[in-house]
Length: 190
DNA sequence: AACCATTGCAACCGCAACAAC
DNA sequence: TGTTGTTGCGGTTGCAATGGT
Image (cartoon, rainbow, N blue to C red; front, side, top):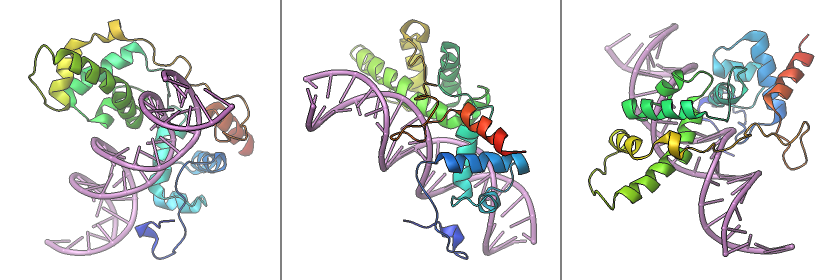
């Protein structure tokens, strides 16, 4: 296992990879009691063998109570495309205009859904015109015209909040809904 | 049923900007 | 003013889930 360069003094092992439910609970619990702070300190104080960076990412992208996940609406998709045409890959900037959405989610969404459409539409339209091999902004504008999201859009997935049930199973023990985690947190904290 | 390919997403990495000392 | 630590961002990767043959 690799070690973070920043923990040379203590030489504490650093966990990587998927977060467990236990770690999530620790983080939620700690932040609801102490608030967000300096992430490295927070990670240490909470007893998490994670880097501050990892804690921050986990909190911002997943655990935060106001984070919305899945079910990107056609309106949101349209907005993402508009803003991306305007700003390019400024995901955090774009995310600020979509309440509850994270830059990571938007970035993933763009890469997995929209960029796929762009490629398809691009290879389609390239038969007609061979211009523009430019990056994000220009090609996006082009695509924005090429595919009308309201026409071609079909909901990518109806139930992304499709947690595999109220209880974790053997194979997916991390699959807890945020409601579950937060209610557990509320039970834990007095 | 078994295998392989593709997809979607969580998490990591590297870098730059900023703040504190 | 230089150094060090922290934060935020964008790019990339790893892997589980899903689909296709």
